[in-house]
Amino acid sequence: MSTRETWTTRAGFIFAAVGSAVGLGNIWSFPFQTASNGGAAFLVVYLLAVFLIGFPTMLAEFVIGRRSEQNAISAFERLGFSNWTFTGALGVFAAFVTLAFYSVVGGWVLRYIVGSLTGAYFGDTAGYFAAISAGPGAIVTHAAFMAITIGIVAFGVADGIERATKFMIPAIIVLLIGLAGWGATLSGAGAGYSYYLSPDVDVILSNFGSIVPSAMGQAFFTLSLGFGVMIAYASYLGSDDSLPGDSAIIVVLNTVVALLAGFAVFPVLFSTLEDPTTTSGGMGTAFTALAGAFGQLPAGQVLGFVFFVVLLFAALSSSISLLEAPTSYVVDTYDYDRWKIAVGVGVVTFVVGVPSTFGITWLAFYNDLVFNVLLPVAVFLIAVFVGWVADAEAFDELGRGSVVGDVPGTAPLTTIWLWWVRVVVPIVVLYTLYLGVTSLYTGLTTGGYF
Ligand code: PHE
Image 1: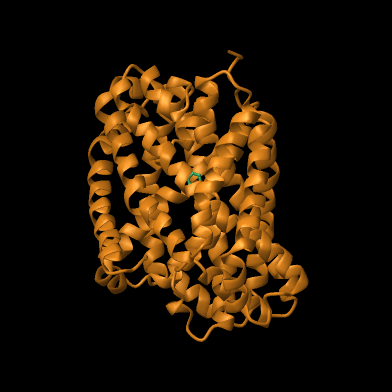
Image 2: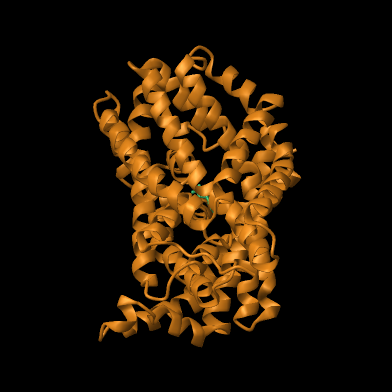
């Protein structure tokens, strides 16, 4: 078998991991979830979820990946715990299901880029969305988005993923700053910022049961946790990188992008909608609400174009990581050409995604299955594995090339981390899982999906 690939530079790894993290989750769902869940109230819980639960979990995945130098499935075997392989398999399965519907949404984005240029969606935003989000047209754009994703992954870790994300991430940040700056000039900016940034404790307390699982699911999803993606990405790392240092950068950059997206979207919503606080986090709302807003604003065509290009880059830099998770498993296990594997896996995923072009309820069902069930289960298992099963290994690995392990006096941080992963993360995640399963069950039995 040929030698295993690695990232060419530390920055290359960071760009790729930030690329995986920054996605539709940050720019499409974060602002709309925040809008529909009480604004700043949601934001506070989300930030806590990201930093207190997401960050330590990302470290746990990095430990598994770099220690084993294997994809998420083989990693457990390589570490000597073959009966834990199912944990990686579950994550890779979640990645596969996610990519299937992610690519459908990616296809909508492609369509909206064209629609911005021609102004096609300005007249009847709801009608346009309905027309392009389902049916044969949606299958074509889904195929186009998947083809681009396959193309990048086929080039490999360094030449494909690293190169593409090094270009896309800076572009996303610069363009979003531009959009947020433009948002500041709109009439609704003040009202938007205040809803976005001044938390109301009563809102948090009275909606605890719904805010917590949404914020937690959003935190895992946005950080690409539980999917085996971060395990696979860390497996291409050299031993001199600092895992805590790298994850801190990744988590912070990912949060900055989500916050920036909020700064771009809230002024737009508050300048153009009657009551933006009732904007549901539903699948199509982001598209219809924003498309409608762009239509009412000066230079809406240009702004719409820029916004959807940002969304496309974000979606692609994530979809390639979703495809890489299963691809790396096949590459590590069998001696086929990477490009053949990428095409094979991509085509199967495309087929699985086709039902979600028939109707938005399928898409919502896939989405909730991943958010409410697969993600929390996978994260729970990873925390238990790193904390209780592989703990000596984890301890060692965290210190390698690490600012934490090498600087005298910082070793207690490693201990705190280990106990956090052992106790706090599993308990919080189990609670989230309970709330998430309940809501999925209610949705299924009350005909919320089909
Ligand atoms: N983090 C990506 C987003 O926010 C989604 C994603 C999840 C990508 C898991 C890869 C793995 O859109």
